Amino acid sequence: MVVIVDTISNPLRPRHPEKVNRPDSASPPKPDWIRVRAPNTRGYADTRNIVRANGLHTVCEEAGCPNIGECWDKKHATFMIMGDTCTRACAFCNVKTGMPNALDAAEPHNVAEAVAKLGLAHVVITSVDRDDLADGGAEHFAQTIRAIRVACPSTTIEILTPDFLRKEGALEVVVAAKPDVFNHNLETVPSRYLTVRPGARYFHSIRLLQRVKELDPAIFTKSGIMVGLGEERHEVQQVMDDLRSGDVDFLTIGQYLQPTRKHHAVMRYVPPDEFSSYEKVAYTKGFLMVSASPLTRSSHHAGEDFARLKAARAATAR
Image (cartoon, rainbow, N blue to C red; front, side, top):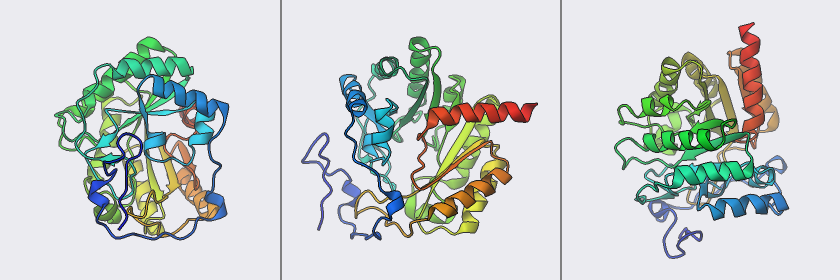
């Protein structure tokens, strides 16, 4: 039996206690198009040092993002607020599961300080799920947005939130803080939810994104899915239609990669030409912006994509 150990904070604590007793799931070997270089640049080291100095967590590290070397070399980090421990146990995710610690009241200020030190023109803020909190962490998101606005008035802010399931009024608190982009990922197609994302509800997530636009039409909305989890092509296209019914602006599609053998297996590595096909189809359905490739992730090239998103909206308004 393999025990998955958290070597970041406590070498004696299983990183995924709920997955320890699961049988191993073997994935096929990675194809050449999915491989990346190990991070070892000066820019990467500088970004890591700023993150550590401010006592922050990043989804880049916690989720094992394959693009960390490229992004951190450019001083682009996605900050993960409200701790490093999630109250849910999604089958695809490498973030630790368990009972989180209390919120750090200084975290919004520390995030804003790190954004200033990195000189970010565009920043992405995400979080763990905090089902233990009455508002799911909504006010903490709002405080972080406001702190960044004070410290870095010209920085545009993109948030990647949980679903705030059964947290009445939480979404309104976050939207009132006026992020520039509101992202909430569907992660997969509806038929895979019970296996891949059992703690979430597909149509609740669709409604969440739709509600953002009802509350503030100026905010860009964004969502993403992974492929390679056993979905069918027609299901991916239906997800596109469901998102467009909620007036979502931006869609990302990337390849699922298995963090450990205790996580959901990769059922298939989708070749690059299929991603290109998905991108073309998505544009015909009316998305302002689409990013689809094997290594696409929610916050990959987020700053450049935001500029293109604004340009696309301006073009449609003429």
